[in-house]
Image (cartoon, rainbow, N blue to C red):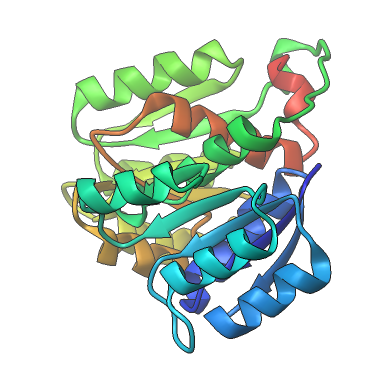
Length: 258
């Protein structure tokens, strides 16, 4: 477990990050602007800072400089709505642990945190029928097959839906632990299915699959109550990490034999 400080002015993103990281077993504090972020760092001396690049009161670059001046060994992950290769290089050359784009979803933060501070995961055996269940809904067979294979590798059972209507039906029948919904699907889109199922499946975690550059759909999913969103083409390791973090929170991590 690590002590993590989130400095982010977007309340939707801040709350989603707090929940993701808390579910992964970390202790999380948050600040909503650059000035309070610097003060929180000096008071709390966290193990890691997740820093939004665009902040009120004091910019992300100003916060970065202040923190590094106060503690040159501070570990900071930059989070931005956009990234220019030159700017990324500047931050990394000045000691940033990672520079991540919000367009890729928030689960990539989990992987970066794991890389920076490490994790400790218990191992356990369980009966096959107790394995966690994931519903993958996407009209592209290749996407469904890739996700099913990857989730099977970490011990999950996977059921598939080819459109929004089938996804809603299967979710109601099977009551999966995790529901992964493509935003653009025939019959019902992912956001519509999300709105329908959230009140009916309060114990399930929902993840939306978006197209690259469709951060607004991802933010809408978070606002509605989704756990996270992932952008196509996705990094399959990020998907696995997000699923593992959720199962840890659900006390089902042992079921996947991690």
